[in-house]
Image 1: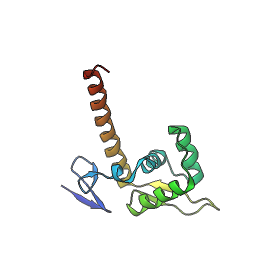
Image 2: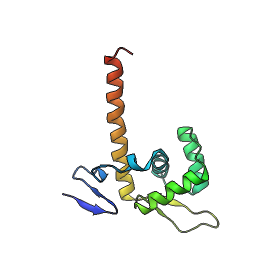
Image 3: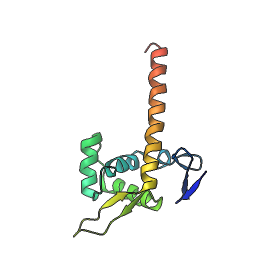
Image 4: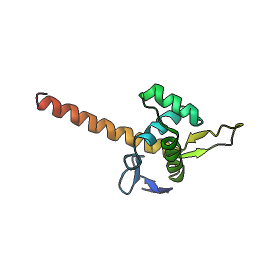
Length: 123
């Protein structure tokens, strides 16, 4: 049935929801980009900024990055790892990976509906 995790819960189909909806829809694009970046392994702040810039063409400022990291950590979607000299790496958690999957699935559904409507509208 449901397993309680942090501030959200897993549904039977492994979607991570918060208040009945996609948790990443509530926390914003920067958070989704951070989780996508962390999906292939831990990174520190500068590494995240560089990876996201290469991946999505978006350059997150330090305030946006660290605000999103704090929010994601409070939600239990990422965790900080022991510092390596001055670098403070983060990694995605299992609930974070589930939240990312649910968010990407949601985006795919919306994208498919939008493309279909464009075709039906003759645009």
